[in-house]
Length: 145
Image (cartoon, rainbow, N blue to C red):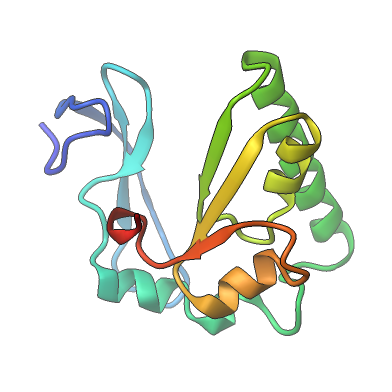
């Protein structure tokens, strides 16, 4: 039994492993829901821990977190996720929680999806949509309308 239920309502989850995080002594337990297969941290870190984990330094200096080959690999991964979503669903709406640089949302929008994202801080939301081309909500997703 897990501490928090999955979005599907199931409380049973299979432990996968513990994720280390830069700057933290503790690790975070990753579990997989036995009903729907969603992977998530359980229990979820507190708002204080999330704020520390996603401090300004997490995003790197300037407007880009990664450069060179790492940036190219990250970009390819984002495009691959959008292609996978488009194979599974021809249309619909996507909410990307923690949308990072917004590239996944742009790729999905090019494939005909209605897209929105969330980020915890206004600064990270500006990084996701510096030209205002994406709707990015600021704050904890559980507290947004």
